[in-house]
Length: 189
Image 1 (cartoon, rainbow, N blue to C red):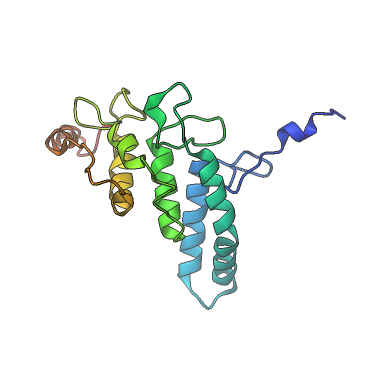
Image 2: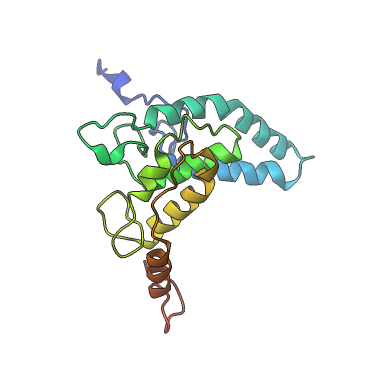
């Protein structure tokens, strides 16, 4: 066989989309939320106990994996400091900040050091129109705005600086209000 078979083995504590697939923040988020639902469904059932056991057993590996996804230096891009990759060598955007903030909060493994500069990174993704883009200087989008607002909420207690994040809340409120569709009654992205 190919001598490079080990190149297809992905290192990480997260969940992939299927057997042998690379761990990814989005699939890890979905898997952890699913296990949390199962764990809380009926504490006396075998499936709930197995879900709790799996969550407990994955905590340390997930924490180490999240650290490996962190952007600690500028890597020729000062805009990514404090952000996280969605997967190894993957894109850096607010989805990763949100999914990691959510998972670490649920599993009680969030730390100030893990989220150093993350609030500033998320705040830097706000656009001139008020919404949030996937990354700094990107177009605002409903999904990324949800991720940014949720991440900001979850991470407030990990703000170790004396400064507050520079969010333009009036512009954000205006952008959100303009996304409400009168005819359809829904939210446009």
